[in-house]
Amino acid sequence: MKIISVLVGVFVLLACRSGNDKRILAIKTLPSFKMTSLVDGSCINSNQIPSGKPIVFFYYDPECDHCKLEAAMLGRHLDELKAASIYMVTQRDSVAEIRQFASACQLDRRVNISFVRDSNYSFFGLFLPSALPFMAIYDREKKLRRIFIGEVDVPSIAYSLD
Image (cartoon, rainbow, N blue to C red; front, side, top):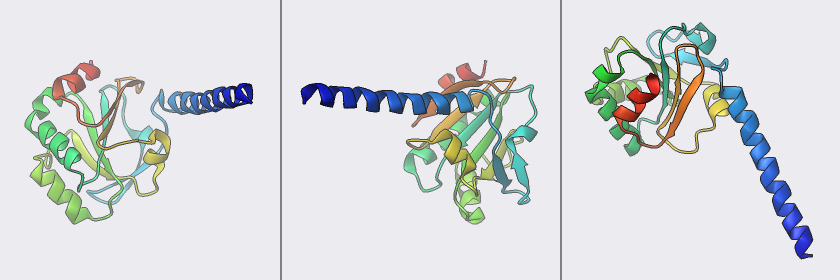
C-alpha cells in the first residue's frame, strides 16, 4: 500500500510539472492575446506590439493594496523605466476606477504606459498569475526575460530590461 501511495504521489508531481513546463513554453516568446485599450476602446493584439524595446506587462487590480504600492513606486521612478513599453493590464471594467488609479499613482499622461483591459481573460489564461501584482517582462525581441509575482523594487525591474 505504501508503494502505491508513493507512486501516485510521484505521478501527480510529474503531471503538475509537465503542465507548468507547457505553460512556460507557451509564454517564452510573447504569445498572441487580445487587450482592450482604455483610451479609445480599440482591440490591441499583442502581435501588434512593435519589437525594438522591452515590454513590461503589469497585471493589477485597482483595489489591491500591493498593486497600489507597486504602481506608486513605478510612478515615482518611471525615468528608470523609460526605455520600456509598459502595459498596465486589469480585468476591471470601470474606466473611471482605472483612471483614478492611474492618476493616484502618477502613471497617467506617460507616453510609454498604456492602460488596457483583459476583457476576455486571455492574458490571465496564458500567464495564470498566482498573486497580484504580477509582472511579465519581455526583451526587445519579445523573449521572456523575467516574471515577478508580488511587489518588486525598481532596480530589479530595470535590470531585467537590459
